[in-house]
Structures are given as C-alpha cells and as structure tokens.
Length: 352
Image: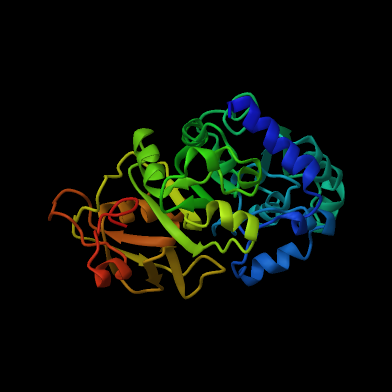
C-alpha cells in the first residue's frame, strides 16, 4: 500500500469502524499492564467516553513529570493527555497530536469539564490535528519537549523512521521518549503488512525489534531500554489463521536524547545511588527491565546508564560517583535472563 492508502485506511478504522475498544478483534491495542495506584486514581477523574474509546497497548507515562512539557503522539480521544495533565500539574503542559477528526472531537469536547475536575484555573492541554511524521506543521519546535509519549500508534505510521527523527528533533537535550507499541520477533511478510484488518489492529505495521534498533542507531540514538514486555495473544481465529506464525509483543521502550551514549555498555568505574526522592518511588526506581535502583544503595553502572540518571530530569534524584576519565573496557550489563540462557549479551539497545 502507498503512504496515502495506509493513512486513509487508519483514519477509516479508528474514525468510523471502531466505535469503542470492544470492537477490537485482538488484544494488541488493549492494555493489560497493572497501572500504579496514582495512575488509577488519576484515571478515575477522566470522563467515561474518553476511556471507552482508548486503544492503547501499555501505560507509557514515566515518573517525575511535574512541570514538564509532554507530547503525546496519536493521542486519540485524549486518555493519556488527560492522565499526563494531572501528573505534570498546573505548571506543566501536555500537547496531543492526532490525525483522526472523530477522535479529536471527543478529546476537545471534554477539555473544559476535565480542567474543572482537575481543579485547574487555566487549561494545561492542547489538541492539534496533524501527522506524527511532520510535527513542525503542528507547531512543535526544535528542543522544546521534555517527554514524548505514544501508546500503540507508531506502528500505524507508514514512515516510522521519519517519526523517530521528528521525536529526537523536538526533544530537549536530556529529554525522554517513553512509548508502548507492538513489535515482532521476525519480519512481517508483505502480504500481511498490507492486510487492512491486521494493520488496523496494530499488527500489520509492527516493527521487527532488530529493525527498530537499527532505525534508532541510524538517527543517532545508540541505546534504548525495555521497561516492560509481554507477548500478545491473538485470540481470534481469523487473525490467527493469517498471522499465527508471527510472535507479537507489546513493549514499553524508553530512550533519551543524549549525545554521549555508546553502542555497547562501557565501564568507567561509575556508580549511581537513587535518593528515593520521586514521590511514587520512595523505595526503588526501575530504569529498565534489569536496572532497579534500591534507595540509598550504590549500584555499579555503565557509562550509558550513568548518563541516563545524571544528565536527564532524573539527575536531581540520583548521586553518581565517577566520570568518564578512565575506561575499564566493556561493562557486563546484560539482563539476567540473557546471562542464564547463555545468549548474546549485546542483543537489544546497548548491552542492556
């Protein structure tokens, strides 16, 4: 399919074919992650119509968002925008971008009532019609956003490399991309990529995880981290018959705009100590699926991990000892599951 055909098809699927999340044929675009208590509390303040038409596949809202400018790519009816609105507080701001008129109409119609429910004197959200491949047209300037989030949307883009290039253009230095999406363990056959139902269900456009790694590397992001991962059960005979040979995963990914990152984990003799100062994480802070910092306990880290907790908005919550003046070779930073299986420690992101 051409780019315009894909765009038209996605607009039709999410604007007219799907009335609520109950119309989805698979669980690919349905979140089954356990939300943290403060997220569940914030969701209770969001109008039912917004929640009923939510099609995300994860919970892509990182901690420490107070006062931040957040950009939600493919915001739909605005569930994550309104959730983030409460997390950034009245001094922060959240921008939602979507191309589907029907979805944006719902999001905008609830704006005044949501601000009232949150107790805000002025609105801290804005919904803009546009395409995630062209954020400049939506008025998003270079180096203007603290955090970019997206919930099961980038897979729907016909030009994913351009999406990621735009993301790193608009992120501030030290800014974070934190998103949930569908990935595969092998490349999709072209016939399945062009299937309208599979594409609309967030399966046809899913990226092979190694092609995703190569894509980020090409645009200058040498290390990403997995925050959560689950395999997707198709649970639909028609979809299973077409794509049952593919292993699909919902993965929550975080990546930072940091110039100092390297393509493998390197050892500079550094350690990092979490101070326990993020309100929702008093006892521990999970950086990714195999780096959990215990409050007050120094932890040996590679140069990339040190930068992620020192040169970002997390810097005030950590104490990092050491610098990059002395190098000790590669850092063994592989997930425990990889070590136990005897697999390649450098599969995924950096060695992490």
